[in-house]
Length: 223
Image (cartoon, rainbow, N blue to C red; front, top):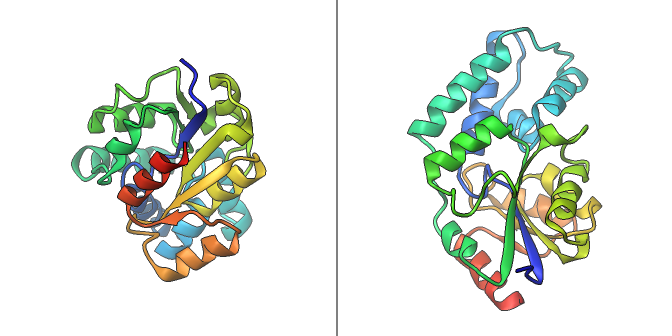
């Protein structure tokens, strides 16, 4: 049955405190090939974006053409970390169990990597091939709105009836440009600081939470 609202979930930094793992892997491997990128820059430029957009950003910001093998090496390390270090953020599952919403996932990660994440965290009852959307399915990922608009169209919702749950500035910009409501979760390791929260506020976002239990309370009272 179609519910009144669609919750569009990002994954890394929202469902799991995993963005820090991928950004650290990218920093390490880029440093090895002579790209002097800091962890903060890795978060700023690479968090929340798909592979095609990572290649473009690295060229634009650091004048780096990604050599063959780097993406595979980062992927290998990422899979290792997914299986050994990734944990679901407390409070996520109670949000997913809110039956007054429909739920879908719209992530900058690949379908292959997303399947592994879903398997590791045992989230199959919430997400499957019919409600998982990856930046691989659009020409340009976040901060362009295409991924969120695709998810809404496929599930059958107008943008105004969607609520995006994001952590990254790229994702927030994409949600705003899609004409969707947005909740920003800042409880992950890389976003849990006042400077980052102020950055999100400066983007015009009002609903900012560092505790997923507060997200749950907000969602429960919103419909």
